[in-house]
Image (cartoon, rainbow, N blue to C red; front, top):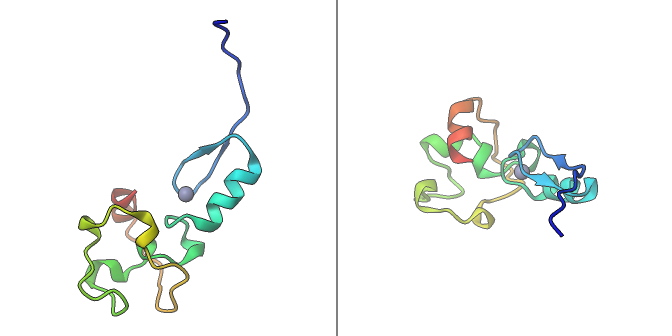
Length: 88
Ligand SMILES: [Zn+2]
């Protein structure tokens, strides 16, 4: 069997990941640190000058997405798109 089958896929706007099902994409968007709706460190403007919630925390040394604080009460949108892109 060497057939290639064309399939439909769903891409999320938050980080560009692709999912086989729309449901999978929707679940991802609720958990993704790159989705501003989740108010995570990755899309927060305080990531540049430091955050009082994550004092001493350096994003460069932290590659584990699950360690980002989500739904932070101090979160404010970072309008520096180039930085957000770099973090992805
Ligand atoms: Zn995402």
